[in-house]
Image 1 (tube, rainbow over the protein chains, first blue to last red):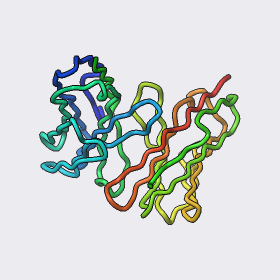
Image 2 (spheres, chains in turn blue, brown):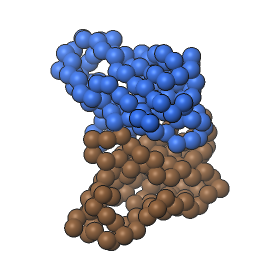
Image 3 (tube, each protein chain N blue to C red):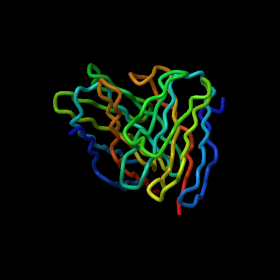
Image 4 (cartoon, each protein chain N blue to C red):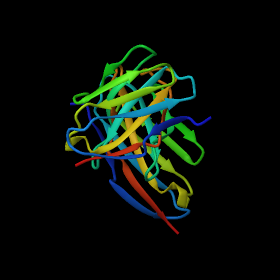
Length: 114
Length: 111
């Protein structure tokens, strides 16, 4: 089992460019999450998907869109990247949804917006 | 305001020694508290999850405690190893859909 995989590992964008961060899990989990992690701040939830076909906003959704393509895949899109979106992005999945259960995190995507 | 505060911010200990990391929170209503270990350049890995009724939970050399009355948790690491060098993150979940992450304690274990 690969667990949670993310692509790409690193990305540099210019302001205004768009890109999609990909995430996939092979644990048959219902719930998936996108977080960002900035220096000196805790992880912050961007969007989550409690089950296939549903998505909901987290704490910091502005500037992002998500797609739960199927049970395995959950993508995060930046339509017009801004320097404030420079961060490390983590995807996670869990079996039991938001209420409980262990969250398994991917290795992260390090994004720099210039 | 719901917050999670961790202390110390950083800690250096000798290999083989024990240490205790602290987490204080104001999150209410409380659902569960989690401790994660995050190695540099990697995603967080779950160590423990505790609900209101649990006051101790162990995972190998890691033991977490929870005092829901005082809203405090600690993570005790026994007989530290070099591989314990990492950031340890405390996360509190409310009964809704919110997770509150601490900023972590950076632990360095030196030989």
